[in-house]
Length: 572
Image (tube, rainbow, N blue to C red; front, side, top):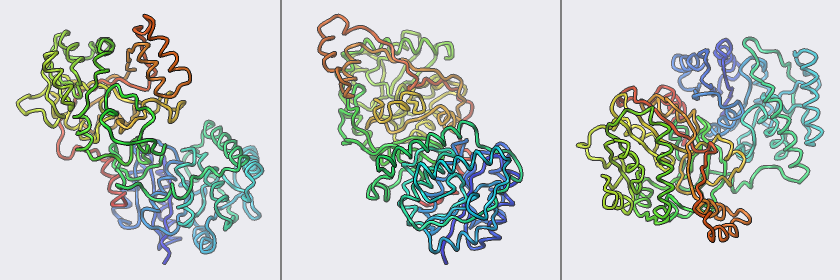
């Protein structure tokens, strides 16, 4: 018997979700159902989980994501799920009964001889219950798509569609732009370009049974932009899909589960560039901006990270070997950077008290903090840097990682970690250890990368912080989720400021291949301007201050992580 998965995405569908699932099983009793819920405020996810536990423990799969991540990304997750679980057919539909489940047996039959089938309002026999203005707009948009994309489909925007697994493997959803409703246009275009075995059958599209529409004006604009992008690709003879040899399978070393939510489903953002392990690439002042691993985005929570990754012991070994004389030659800029940022958060910190700096490097921040009356201690994996901190600056520093801090060190009133969390092979475990090292109601302050800021959006793969040594690329919402799970409450978010010299800036620009940067660097070195201080605060590095509000137990993971992990099982 053909193994079929029926998928739908939900957000505030408490009136529709359970009856829909029951209707799906009534029409296709041998199928399995996957529902991805974006943490609906009306409790849709909990209703579905109860239905799964009480009625359909083996055939209903429920994944509750931590927030709204877009219906398109949910459909990408469904494709990954279907392929990982060995389903031969995937049928997708809306959750509001606008797609009548009565068509499911017909879709299953049509998939016997076709790679792609789609329910259409605009073929003969189809109809739509929209009002006249909305119906005209929808018909015009689909007609424009047919005209510009030169595909045989009269319907490209509905999600009532079915796929055979061999088409899913070639579809390459990773390279389909758009995580919202615009995804559907790109997906239909890609399917039509990849296969001629396509069936379009008439459906009666009814207006939703309950609730309100989720399509915003912004999504409509994104849909038209997607259409223009695809039209341009077609004019240049490009399908947008990557070669199958690049798409098929995960890289050697297997899948790295998401550190924030446990999901094993992700899409590739950027393929690996020149990426070879070398300790010099792990220097704080590394200029290896053209080298990074394969960058993916988690479909379970949106975290961006390197996949695959080196084993933790190898990463630690590389950091232990780091020697960075360039850092010392620019130590005055580091002193200014730490002085400025500490001054910004001082009102949020306890007066005096014990302070631990994780990833303290040569101890410059510890020296600054000690001048402000803190009793300081650092931990640093680099043998060279820890020795410099202890012997030259005289600031107590443990050589190693947070695991190596001796129990007799006790707890700290303040724990800091500047531009370190993105380097950690296991950030969630590190946050858990930081909880253990921090006094109750103590403060954890740190800076890290913000992948959802404008610089990475505009610069793409040329964003300078996409490097081998950076394993994770966070955003504010994910940081908030991880902190809460680790027993912290976020109190302050700001922009971290790096202060650098003009000479150092030109060196960075040269390493990025910016035209004229090399000439400017040689010229500026001949002038006093080379030591001019320049503040950098573009929002791609954020400053966080959090308060420890609870101790952790062995069951520290919140329910959303537990649910997500259980739903995915051992699909990896």
